[in-house]
Amino acid sequence: MAKAAKTTQKNIVDEIQAGVKAPDFSLKSDAGDTVKLSGLKGKKVVLYFYPKDDTPGCTKEACSFRDGFSEIMKRGAVVLGVSGDSVESHKKFKEKFHLNFPLLSDEEKKVLNAYGVWKQKSLYGRKFMGIERTTFVIDEAGKIKKVFPKVKVDGHYNEVLEEL
Image (cartoon, rainbow, N blue to C red; front, side, top):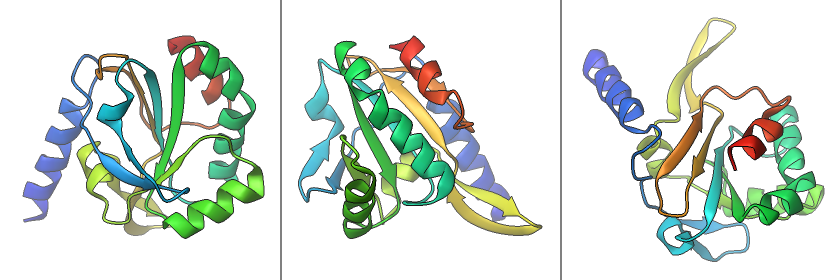
């Protein structure tokens, strides 16, 4: 059984690569509205998945996108952050760090699974399911232009900017 699940996960990741159509989604934002990827056609999208609100790495990543937001906008792109945290958690995180882009809540993990970022992780020998920090750059036609798997936060903003 575990082997079949692993194969399915691998197949999803293999499909989510540059050149393919990005899986559409509809998620609640920190503002309480619904954001649909298909509603952003004509714009580039920086879709980044992060493990948890208000943790050191996730805060550093969010703040780098916040600080570079005007440059991202100049390049015709929007930023969307996604995690499994609640809308309420996102609201607090966004207010605390004055984030200037939407944070989307995927508590049901449907989008996390669709993009292949909900994975088995290991920490101090303990295995658990969690989000692998990953960024997708999506072009104006809704196709994935670039995938950044297993993101290292330091320097990531600059990598993303180069792709825009």
